[in-house]
Length: 125
Image (cartoon, rainbow, N blue to C red; front, side, top):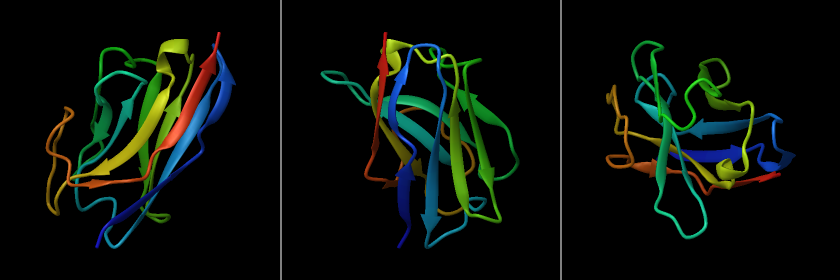
């Protein structure tokens, strides 16, 4: 059973940075596509970005492109979301997600099979 555990959320001022971590158990981070999604109060869940299961290329939502970076550490079996130049509109619960074994590319809010419990990110203006 694949389990995902996010950490690193918190309160930060606008313009600041945070790094979220997603520790993976029951699988390896390089065997499937991994991603981050978020849900702001009163809004639908939104795709933030993903990293391919095979290779290192990434995809991002337009709203975070150039500010957020996804990476993975295979030795630690962990995926990261580095968030810079944070804005108040980035306030949301952030979820780590994983595709099925062998999946390579996902770049949207659907198709994810495993989810973490979420971590709150609050950006004050």
